[in-house]
Length: 201
Image 1: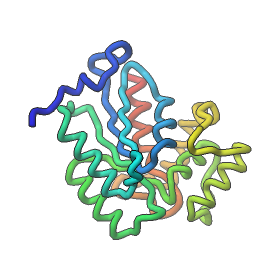
Image 2 (image 1 turned 45 degrees about the vertical axis):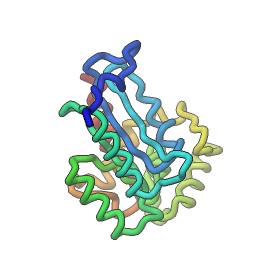
Image 3 (image 1 turned 90 degrees about the vertical axis):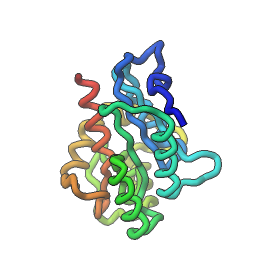
């Protein structure tokens, strides 16, 4: 099958022809897509591949969506493909196998422990190491923001604290060899660092 040209993905009314492409397959259906919409800029194009109506959110399905995309489009060396999912429901053995496969395919990993809300909370404060479930982190986020609705993020609450979140997450888990944070934390900062770098070029 002939691959499609990546420029078909760009919004030619808006994106530069050489905009860097970030393809992000997510476990979540809405939260991550809303969050990454904050980074709209003509120099980058973020293509989110969320879980669909079929609710196939297990890491293997997230990986499959990225594989399907990679087989369909020609990419440049500057483009990056990311897997973003949580560790809270899938088990170490399963996650480890997915990470190995992803690395073999040169995909990047942005995994959160226990869930994406850990990344969101890092915009405001350090994580409590005792918050080991997504329910714990969501409760803490709700306390911090006054309310929290994962289907309707208040992006204004986060946008001024993105670099703070990167610093906190990086301080918690700075080792690039780690496939996912072994304690509460988030490697989403890795894709955000690349996005911020692309926006400064």
